[in-house]
Length: 92
Image 1: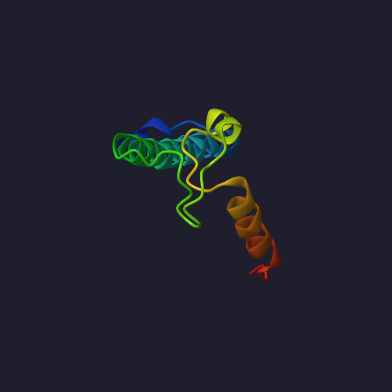
Image 2: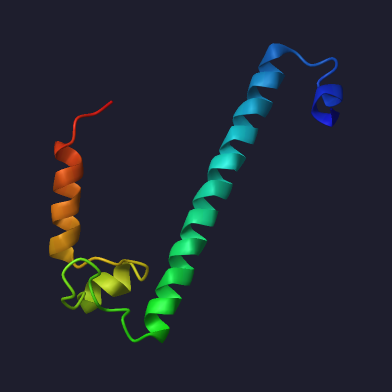
């Protein structure tokens, strides 16, 4: 209701800009929420002594990979294979 009231006297360009900003804010919020979940999971793996264990093959995740991406759950080889499978899937 407040958003509609604020729009009085605005042109379509103002409304379009406002909608784009709102959409961007929602996407950022979703991304932050997703990343916080990954951080919480990484902390649990760290507490369990499994932070450097690949969840796919159970082999160690390389130090450099963990340093570059601390929330990773896959070793380089498993991540590469997963990306290849994803790339091979038909696009909708």
